[in-house]
Amino acid sequence: MSRVQVASIITAFFLIGSHCLNAAPQTGDESQTVRQDSADSLAMNPSAVNVLKANLAKRSPTTAESRPIGFWIQGWRDPQQSFSWSVESPQAGEYSVDVLVSGVSGTRIEIAGPSNKLSVEIPEGNDHWGNNWNKIGVPGWLALPKGTAVITVQSPNPADIATNKNTYRGMALLSLELIELKEKADLNERIRKLRSSAKWLADAQYGLMFQWGEWGYPEHGEGVPWPKMIDNFDVEKFANMVQSTGAGYVIWSSTWQTYYFPAPIQAIEQIEPGRISKRDLIGELADALNRRGIKLILYYHCGYGDREWSARNLGTTDPDKGGQVTGIRVATVHNQFMFACGQTCELQINGIRSGKRKWQYS
Image (cartoon, rainbow, N blue to C red; front, top):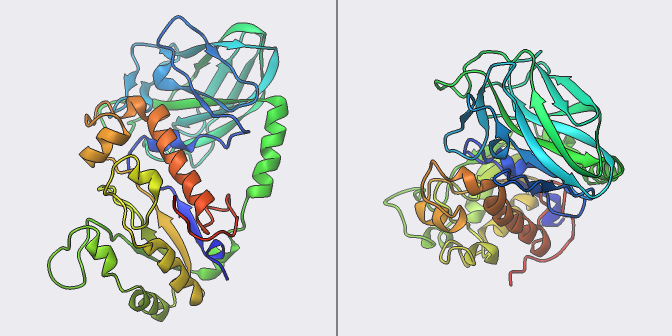
């Protein structure tokens, strides 16, 4: 068996608002983050997923920025409030629309273009605390003409609830995602082919999660400097312990609030030198657990809270400004990281990469 059969990566960001990295799968071109910060309209790309961020839209002044700013817009509680984006299309077309929103079930969201209007109700189970965003498919197709058009979002019945457990009330909007009709069909087919079975997770019944890395301590004694703690880790002893519990999988924190990665991933080294180890602990864990029939899942934190890493990765150490660059810089950095893992490692990333290659780092 190879590591491709036992490993996957879960990108779990414990930074409220990092959901902007959860954009829809792409059709070959990069997704777009809309910036309505000038008189210019966004150039729509019929071959891409077009992401219209709420924080960059023209919006009602009675709504409020998230904290950190730059992620979502909250305080959406009045039917008169609206969000709008000016777009420029190279050709007429019809687009599917997904809305990423946090609000009470039964609330109606309306998306209007120049010639038609779509609507959808927030379903039961939609989280309304601002942490777990729901991507809701809107029935129908939004028609856009060739040239300039305005897309507007409103709600006739926005529920007045506490959002994100703070003083702001009402719903919160993250973004719209627009995909041209022909591309939507191709995208759905790609998703179908790439989707992996999760039956193994149900069969496993239970697993173990470990938060251990640069921030942790050895079994006994004081903390050990990075990366000596990685070099000293006894993989076989650990794998035997896991096996003795009967667990079917392990969730391992590859990174956390201090961003250090226990493998020689050069995509990380190029951003902030000294944050990787020469030892490939992730690969050794995957091999050792695999020999015992145990799967490995990697928990991945984007390192928000690590000031040095944030300065190089987010472009700022100001927590109130971090979200302003998230849609562009962070998405690019972490997409490169995920791509590097899938391309250079014999490691499957959540069913997307399946090439059986040795772990190689350039």
